[in-house]
Image (cartoon, rainbow, N blue to C red; front, side):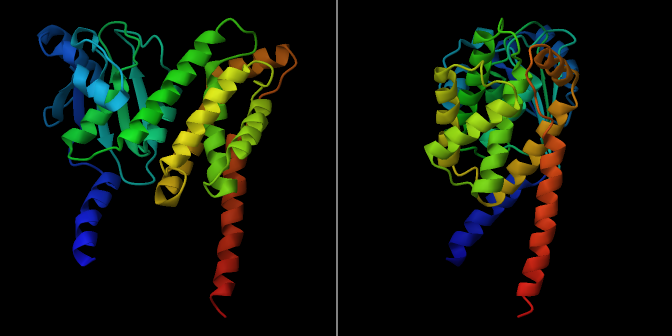
Length: 311
């Protein structure tokens, strides 16, 4: 048992602690294009002491179960793992090339699902890209640092990213819909499961939670049953990965609350609220309130535990 514990502890601590150096991962298409790589390096603000690497077609297939030719892999990333409690900060540098399909909040939601909760991440390309392959670059960075993210979680994260992107595209012309509402709703579903269900939910529980969060985010008359079912399957898969329980759940909940607060303070959310109001809907600003209620509950629980320990 002692030998087993010794073999487990270093990996666990390393995965949760700040790296000595950041990691920059370029898309495979940049390996033979010095000019494009140099421009992208500037966008990422890469430094000489960064660990570096490339993400290839086989990496994308391994992490995400998707097939891309190396020539189209141009999304690149720079990441620095931080200590627990730091939070997840994502920057999209689109000063030269636009990320056309994935928003900052969608990346953040997907990374939280993969178990990455505390890091600084920059995503960029020197020309327009869809941005779908950027996640594989982030996972490759952890591999460069000698750490593994379970395949089950990387697949769940990709399925979530694809679902958010697809649902957003399918509702792009629907009045009262925005991707920011959908991201907020999915994040709040995760918070609800950890906070009020202890990380263990049945499919019926998830359906009830989804219904509640759709109402709170003005999506109840917009999302189709197929889209709702797709979200439910993703949430159930995340639960099976173990992300909603244990110490990882604590890190997930903190970073998820930060994401909700970030969303509700954004211009995109204000625009979504205004448009919802125009058609008689309401989007609740629940992020800050949820954080307050949870903090208050934890405070009183700590008092109760203190007095229990006296007897």
